[in-house]
Amino acid sequence: MGEAIGGMLASAVGVAISPLPLIAMILMLSTPQGRGNGFAFTAGWVVGLAAVVTVVVLAGSGGSGDQGQTPTWAGWLKLGLGVLFLLMALKQWKDRPRGGREAEQPGWMRSIDRFTPGKAAGLAVVLVVANPKNLVLAVGGAVSIATADASAAGKTAAAALMVLIGSLCTLLPLGVYLSGGDRSAQVLADWKEWMARHNAAIMTTVLAVLGAKYVGDALTVVA
Image 1: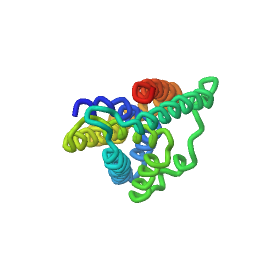
Image 2: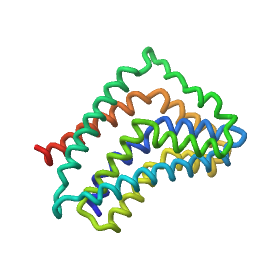
Image 3: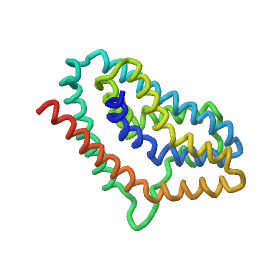
């Protein structure tokens, strides 16, 4: 189980510090329906991430190689994911806002105060499965679990831990909102401002590090 957890940990952290869902969650909590929408968004995110991880782990576990060895297909897949991570890191850096400006908010962010709980949950699922960075991070971590030399119970525990870690971008703001009292609004606003300002640097670093790791891991299998 240790191999499965170690293999997915970096990807899970990458999902957890993705600025977009965290900013969306904070904006949602500041609306009149903040509590209901916050719970719905968190539930949608957890279910969406769990679905992606479960599908990949089940599919990948059926194609394992020899005992203790990473199958060749997983090596090529990790190589492709690693190259994709590096390309996304390059694009993220090239598209960063210049002159200290913040990136323009998507249209759905400007209408978030009119969201219902159902729409909030749907948005969370979309941010998992339709956002390329989050989806590739989730798939990469799940592939590491699927190809690890671990029992079914070990892989299940690693997958559950990955979903938990990857959901911290929604669980932490919700926890602050529910327990922070009068100060919670200011704390969440500070988080939002910091994440928005440093979005490009955060994701460029995460994607570049993961890209290098995945390419290195893949070369030990396919080279």
